[in-house]
Length: 270
Image (tube, rainbow, N blue to C red):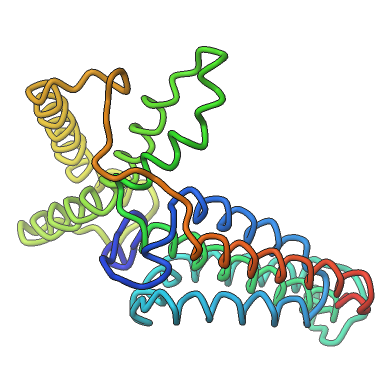
């Protein structure tokens, strides 16, 4: 399961999505997430899904990687769907003892599942197609107005990007530690809740030691390279808007407008 977590991974490529300005990609990603929560009917969801499939096709991201990003949240989706089906009041379509499934509950369960899946895939596409360095520069440029109120914009952007970058590394480290403990006879999958919690101690301690060691090595490497934050820092690649960014923004605006229009003129799903 740990190997299926793909947060923070980057797939190098030369697609149109890879060449976009990272600032535009961040803004469009947040716009897509907002659009998902504004949709009120099936036609709107079809448009959102079609838009997402188009981006995946243009970005040329492997389908396996897309499913890999969704797999870890499947238990959450199933749990949320079950809660909605059994605890939303409305027109009953199935009843057994104290359990009742309503048509409204089924509709909301489907809607929430689609929203969560599209949200995760859309967010994953941002990190799949944007390198950590480009992501840091984009976050810093977008938060630049906060410098006027003495907010540490560069430091915040750097911390966010480093944290995102080291998620796959820590996951890989955790998987190695768990495999090593199992090889030594550790039982991590059986027993009650207390026993499983105690079994995690031999995993968490070396993981924290490894994380602090990596942080110290990174800090030492940055200091040896005379890193002094954003002061006097120059960039090898300057962020510039291009025709691709303008066209992508236009497509997003058209899609967003279509969803709003559908919400107004098409009957609601539930």
